Length: 217
Image (cartoon, rainbow, N blue to C red; front, side, top):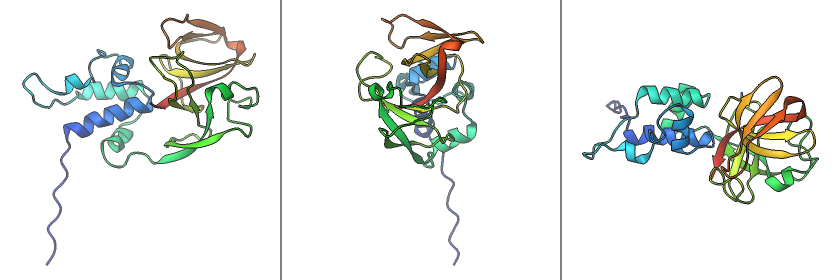
């Protein structure tokens, strides 16, 4: 006797909200950071917004999800993966402490990992064979990143205003900032710590720049 077909799985509120949390994590953001980057009220994706005043579960709007995907340069296909149990597989990427990454021989001229001091760590898979990870040391980037956090950096990923980036200057400085504005002549960078001043670099002084796509905190 043939078995009856399995009933289709029902999409739940928790799955969709978890997918948004995962999407934020891939971009190195908190839920409120993702909302702000998407041009939404910073509280849009907060846990307090996921339940109505009378205790019922609330769905995020289709518009807010679409804006979050656009802001993080991701597709609906990825979001579907994040909803279900098929989260993109992990890949081993080179890992180096931030202090060691400032050494002259840690990267080649293209901003790809070089030298023998790199370790490896399994992080979410992405389509960039030159992706690498850095372990944050110290608290100079609080509250964005704290000592021991690991960031995943993708040289191949498109960079847009508002993205967090790693920048290497031609005189050897390595810095982590948020991109405010980029022109043919200058790079305007915002400090992750409000106590530190923003900076403007001449484009000719920048050796390479790469986008931070995910953070393990």
